[in-house]
Image (cartoon, rainbow, N blue to C red; front, side):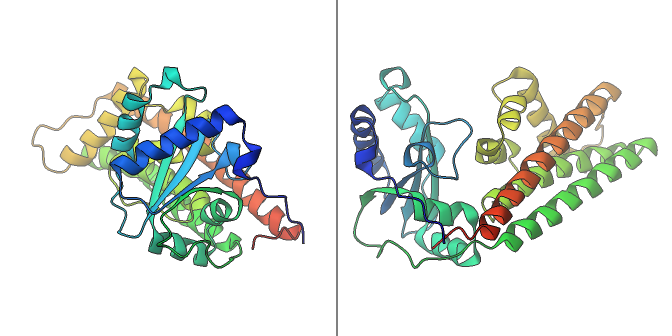
Length: 287
């Protein structure tokens, strides 16, 4: 079996260690957290964000109640990005039971975080580290097949409805297409999906796994912000607003973006599935 030498906190440059210590302190003051695991670029892990930065998994015994968006806002206020050597800090959160469940199912993301990550805080209440687990490539392939095929189905349905002048049906299926495509990425990289109708939240969760996805669908860009709002409008009002309208330009622009997203998602997911399979074929020790 091949086993990489595990990175320790001592391997990280001193200035980054000081920053991480301060970041961990801020997190602990504003969230009930039992474990904080540094993974990705600074842990030299295989599962890392294309955006770089500090990547931290926050684990709590008491559900998934850590609001990482709010916590990021607090962090950037208390310890300004401009004052940090590493500006990007990406926070992920899960419960201890969810972490154990994901690892037992063979989630590449969570197993990699546990196997390669650096524990930077431990409340000593979680009996960590967990029992070693192995990747389950079938989990990620099945998730991709399920959600990507549904995305294709909804996209075809939207085009058919538009051709038949079923405007409400076309609009609703445009939303479902985007939702399924983001879930396809979630299922391949995390091994699970979050049930949420806010596509911007889904984007922020999956942007780490494709540079093209991160750049092309960033809600900060005005065109993308309007697109996300447009899709949410379709979900909320296409079924019950008496004077609902879907204009030709809006439809064609939305359709073009969805087809671009479809290509990006397919490429990113197939690449990741191949990486997982190759690691298993090479006898990489995941335990």
